[in-house]
Image 1 (cartoon, rainbow, N blue to C red):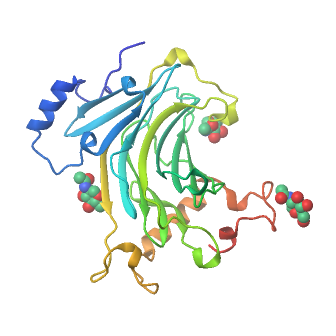
Image 2: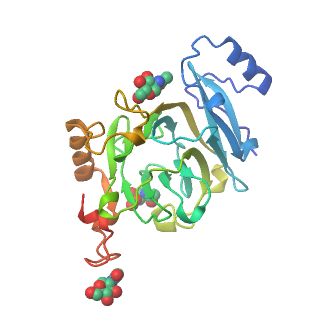
Image 3: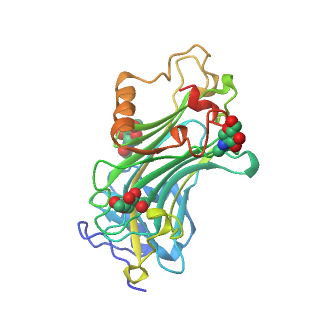
Length: 295
Ligand SMILES: *[C@@H]1O[C@H](CO)[C@@H](O)[C@H](O)[C@H]1NC(C)=O
Ligand SMILES: *[C@@H]1O[C@H](CO)[C@@H](O)[C@H](O)[C@H]1NC(C)=O
Ligand SMILES: *[C@@H]1O[C@H](CO)[C@@H](O)[C@H](O)[C@H]1NC(C)=O
């Protein structure tokens, strides 16, 4: 296997664990979110490495034809904003999937999940950002987007905002997707199972790129994606309210502001390439998921 190297734009500081420990000890800005203290490796650890990318500690995940790699947050959250900066695989990334997602643990049958999956492509062709939301074990809420920049050229910030009234997905602070809490209309919404964040890089050449027609070119391996500045902000309740889940029903605390509404509208008109709510081949008027007629 070819050696893993940090991206060309950053200092080549691939460190041993000992050096990493020393680097952390001497790190000056302890307030900056650091990956190492927030996350743990789950699988494919030998295909990952931490390194200093400028002032931030970054984690590289890699994939070869034998295995990918995956990390998860040490903590579980209930109502939170999670931000992470990701720089996707450069060049030919066909067949690869790089992810950041949140998921609850057992029982699987009723699990909640919020997915961002970046589907790779051949050199020069655009990535697809595939998103899905599961509530109470039921998903099938796919929406896909084109990004308005090259996500392999630099880091961009991807965020999941989860509060009692909305799940929002943001890209560089711009809302691209909103899943509203319509529990009072009979649509499940994640309100009680805590979730952990996961990030992974794996192969899905059967379906990921151009519907599976383009397979992975393993001679390009290892494929490497970079993550940094993992940042967690717990949901802040109104004064006098113990936690976000206790916010009074009539509270306007989590209502979407004008900028968010405008961003969602812009993304929907310009960047959305698939929306389950408008998929009339898959659903018809009688089988359309309920939330599609409410939002
Ligand atoms: C983390 O996110 C919060 C809320 O968006 C932001 O105010 C803060 O500056 C971020 N912290 C870091 C270290 O990026
Ligand atoms: C890859 O590029 C093709 C051609 O531009 C495009 O149709 C497709 O949506 C892109 N993304 C994926 C994941 O196949
Ligand atoms: C669409 O509705 C008809 C009944 O009006 C039903 O027979 C058919 O199976 C439905 N198609 C799908 C894809 O659900």
